[in-house]
Image (cartoon, rainbow, N blue to C red):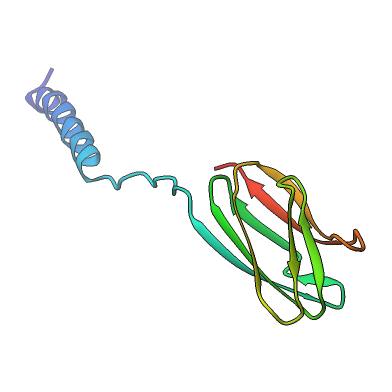
Length: 123
């Protein structure tokens, strides 16, 4: 075996170790999963329809639905079994911790018409 081949067999493993060490030291931190957030979402009810008609939050979030309507309406959030009366033109807040994952209808409690959907995704 020649001197060049021996030198190559010694230098390559050392170079590989240096590269691995540099990677471990200089690599960026992995993204951390965000913890629970405070989510305030503005909802508008007009003409029997809610805008936006679908909202998404993450499990564990503290959620405030700030609802305004063009007419008095009782809203009901299924799954969380929350109800609130909304007066015409006056913002009303519906607050809760998103502890249950899934898809939940938001309905006009008086007419039982579905206004929209709340999606609570697992964290």
